[in-house]
Every structure is written in structure tokens, then in C-alpha cells.
Length: 96
Length: 343
Image 1: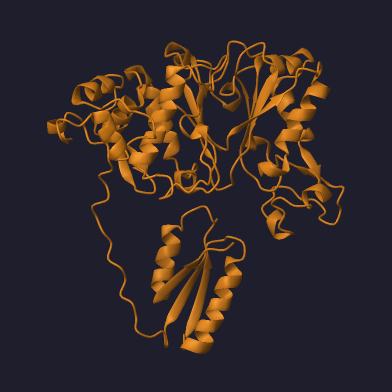
Image 2 (image 1 turned 90 degrees about the vertical axis):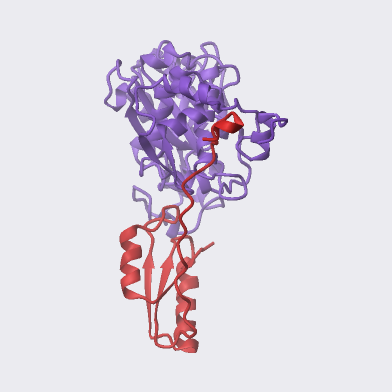
């Protein structure tokens, strides 16, 4: 409310909170990497290729692949929590 | 704000507008708007994605002022907001979509008439304050509280005039059938609002067909248009019959359910035709179809409406107009929501 200006400010008030970025590891060696398929066409192909490359060239211990319910829906909290329990790094892909 | 600045220009500069001038939401105007509802100004109706700012009754009233609403519209706007934040509608999709979809608002019941919300001649606008401003209030909320600004989170390639306001009543008075709401389990006394995720309307003009067997042809053809999307993937769809077109079906003894079934039965194409292009992605695109057909049989009939509940059959517009509208849907990830609203 900005009474002094003669009107009520209609802008969004919700976005004051910030979420800190997760710390970035300096190496992928020995880490478990999560790959989140957003279910767009061929996102799975991109991620499988990426997963193989991470294992072969960067020493990633294991790759965990998960999929969203639908490309136009946000990932559910339970899916995010489950991945957070199991992996140290997660990568999402947009397919074509 | 500098006292010398025109507040209307200030709202343009701050990007608090849909591109048209807004009514400045002074404390007095917002208080007057709040008199149009019994709800507590601090009541949270929902968070508006993707920014997730709270749509309180107070914030809704503020945007209703900006849109040019009367206080009497508040119950409808709050009811619509409750539909928009329903998980089933998945508003974040409608905000961020690269298509041109928007929540189409259909209002049934006696209150629509009381506030002058038109379902008759020219109801899709322009010319009716309630139709123009109720939808506009919701759009301003999607922009200001949801952050749905073009090119930032609203990624529709074209946008569309229906994204300013997309709100009509059903023409219950001139319809030969029970209302849309009645066929969805509501009584004729209920005030009902339905939000349906839809693309813009396409007109089907037909003043030549004198019987339902001919009339259904062009409407069904538009429903199954390759560019419309529904033929390739399950989604909602609305067909809005003018009273004159509805009468052609009714005159032949068809009930609303009969007309609904006939449209579904005729709207479709042979598999070989939809394989020629469009959204055909081979077998992978058919996995979500709610029906099974032999994908090796190019003569197999592919229906545009796989589940009868996906087709929303509505009667609106002016009598004397031999035309109907078809509004294609978006995806299965954003679905229609209906609810009653209290006055």
C-alpha cells in the first residue's frame, strides 16, 4: 500500500525470499548424478547420451534417471525429494 | 511517484498494465470494490504461478478496480480465481505456454444475468463491460501477481486477443437444451463458473445446412483440423453453438447429449491422413491416446475427442447467426475446472 502516492501498489509481494544455490563440486569423480527427463520428445535420448559420457569421461559412479509425469507439469515434491536423497548432482533436460 | 506524473502513465511505465489504460486503484476505489464480496480481504485464494504471489481477496479487488469492474463482479472474479489456482488447471502451463492458450471462462446460473454478463449477441466482445473486465481482471492478476509478462515468463509466440479477456455466460434463455452446468451435475439455481484451457476461437459459418446431418460436417471438420492439435493429442475442446445452430440439432429431436455424441462420432480423420504431417511423431505420440486403434491400418478412424468429457458443448451468441465456434485445447496437462461460487 502506498497511500502517499494515492494508489495501492499492485505489484507482487511474494518474491523477497531467496534460495541459495547448492554448492558446486569441483569434480564429478565418484559422485552419483541424477538426470531428470522433462518428458519432451527425445529428452531421454539427450540424457542417456549425457549419462554415458559422464560415466566414461568424468568418473561418475552412477547415474540415476527419473522422469516428470508430463513435460508441462512441474516436478512433484516427492520426486525432487527422492532424487535429493539419492544423488549429489541433478541435471534437467529440455527435449525437442 | 512524483505528484506531476499522470498515474495512468505511471502504471504503463511500471508494467502493471496489459497494454491498455487501467483505472488507478486508489484506497477508496479498492474499499468500494471489496464491498462487492462477503469474503475477508485478507483471505488467501491462492498463489499465482510462476511468481507465486498471493492472490488475496484484497489483491483481487485491487486488480478488479484496475480492470474497470463493478463491485458486483467480485463473486465471479473470486470464483474464477479459485478455478485458476486449482491444481488440475495447472495455471503455470497457461502462463508459460509457447502456444496461444488461455483460461476460457464460462459462467452459468442466474447471477450472470444480474450483472450483465452477456451470453448473447456479440458476447465474445467488444461491448459488454462485465465480459470485458472480469476476464481482464484475471489477466492482470496473472501478469502482476503471477509474473506472466510477455517474453519473460509468458512465452506465447503470438499471444492473442482472447488473452485480454475470454469470458462469456451461456445463452441459457435461447438455448433449446438444459445448460452446460445442468449436464455437469449442477442445478439451474447454482451459480457456476468453469475455466477451460483453450486456444482462440475459430468461426464455423454455415448458413447452407438445413438439417443436422449436413450441419455437423463442417463443425466436425474444424474440430478435427490437423492444425488444431486435438486430433493428435488428448486435451479439452469447446464447441460453442449459436442458438440457431443448436436449434437445427434440437429440431431433429436431438438432445444436448445426442448432439454431443454426434459431434464426437463425426470429428475425426483416417489415420493415414494425420500421418501426413502435423504433430504426427510416429507411434510414440499415440501412447497417451485414450483409445486403441491398429496403427498399421491407415483407414482406421482417429477421433478428435477420445474421451467424451473432453468436449465442452456450449450454447452462446446471438440468435439469427448461423455460426458456431470451435476452440481447440492445449494438452492433457491442463484440464477444465468447474465450481459454484457464492454471491
